[in-house]
Length: 205
Image 1 (cartoon, rainbow, N blue to C red):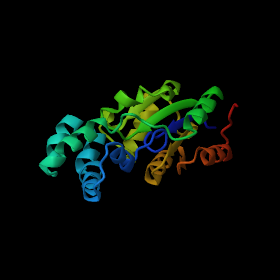
Image 2: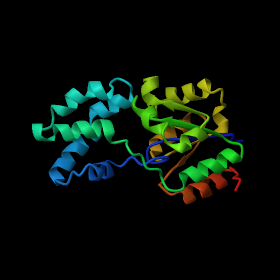
Image 3: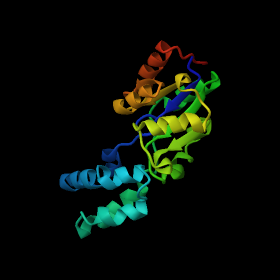
Image 4: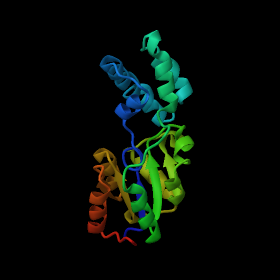
C-alpha cells in the first residue's frame, strides 16, 4: 500500500524553463539565447553541479570562458539568479496539500545544485514536505539506484510503500527498478490526480 508520495522538483513542483529565465533577463538575440542554453543550461558543468562535483562558484570560470566578454555579466547573473523568483507548476501546491491532509508522507527527491535550499525554502509549499534529498548533497543523481536506496534508508521508508513522480521517464524507471511505484508527470496537475487515484491514492478535499 502506498504511504509516501515522493516528488521531483523542477518541472514537477516548480518551473525549470531556461527560455522563461532568458525572457525574464531580457535576452532577445536568438544567437545569444542558443549559446546560453547550450553552453550553460545544457553544459557538463551544470550536470556536475547537480552531482555535487562543482558549485556555482567553481563552475563559473569554465562556463564564462565559452562566452564573449560582452555576454559574461549576463551569464554570471543568470547562473546565480535564474532561480529567483521561482514559479510553481499550477495546481501542484493544492494537490500536495490535499495529499498531506489525507495522511501521506510527502517527500522531495531532486537533482539540483547546492543552491537549492536558498530558493526551495522560500516557497510556502516546502513546509508541507516531511523531508528532502538533493543530489548535490549526496554526490549521486537520479536515475542511479544508489540515490533511491539511500533515500528510503535515510527516512526509514519501505520502497514498496513509495510512489515517485518525475517529469523524466528515465528517473521514474530508476525508481521502479528499486521497488518503488512511479508516475511520469506531464505538467498537468489534474491528469496527475487521475493517475494517483488509479494507483490507489486517496485525497481529502
